[in-house]
Length: 460
Image 1 (cartoon, helix red, strand yellow):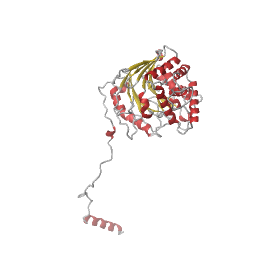
Image 2: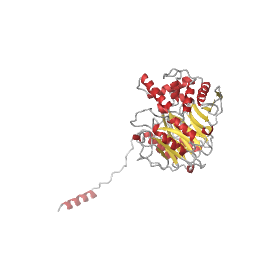
Image 3: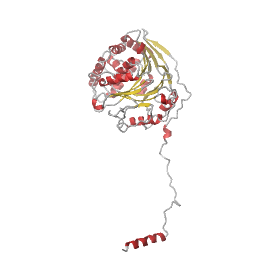
Image 4: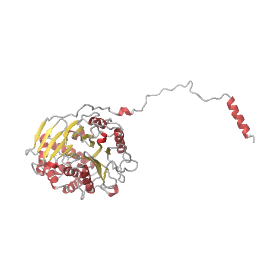
């Protein structure tokens, strides 16, 4: 019974002993070094393109194949190529393209031989020379055998003017037929692409018409070799005409748009534990071309490419838009990875993934639809780019072409951050459905710059 009395007495002593809360009176802050924190704003470019029209480059020289089927206009930053498929057969057109390329770039054969063999060396680092040759030859035979006859004839015609013989892979300055064929099948055989894309529908733009952006990341080659070969290829073939933004000489389509405004761009998606097997497979980059030549709407193209998905050698996305619609064809090629699906803005996303920008559709190097194998959590750059697109465009309701240019180049390159634009960007391509024009920032041989010049590539 005495414990409460003792506690009360102790409390009284504390109140009367003069004890008080500690203060900082007289405290001196010690010397400290400069902050190591970097403001977020220091990683932005502050680019402004308002009032700056995309540059229209003049033709510096024109080169024609002997039969006139191919015409190449050399610009400062790219080659503008017209291949007329209405005036000759496909084999003749392929041959004409190679002949005109050799006129425009006299060392074209050595240039492409070097690049192709650099990619081979990167893909087969641990293989023996003989094993590499056998593997590549088999892949090329399988995929070319599955091509439509017209496309196969084009590739055979293209290979004809070169001097490297029928077979062989070596950096000898000459293109063998196999090396020339491989040039058009790099994504299908060697796989060397990483990209992103976003489209904003009319509810998000000032014009009320769609704006589509595509970032292509690729291996430039040593000393940025391929940045000296940017090409806008116009395949002229009546109702099957299309424009491909690519590299000089390529006849497959990685990024293209047809005269109906159907836009398609391939984005790589990795495969888990799936061994490469070209047996019975088809080229998906030539399937993209065929889809653009035959489909009049984004929906028709999406349905077409999804049906073909099980026959492709690698999983990938195809970003698809027209004036009214936008889709991502998630081309799962193996059952263990998921199911081919045409994703749109309303498709349920995989667990943990969110998208808050209504009226915009995004794609990176991962599947996003619920149920498909996701490479978001395995690779930080995918989740980083996805959420950056969401944040960058979330408050934009009156997008113009110049504002799109600013947003797509708003982050500095060469930082430790996972940005939507890396040091591997080959080009940023914008399709404006209001003016029906293509605009691009093409990386030059000097490499990626923080404030690139945008070029007017013409109408589609």
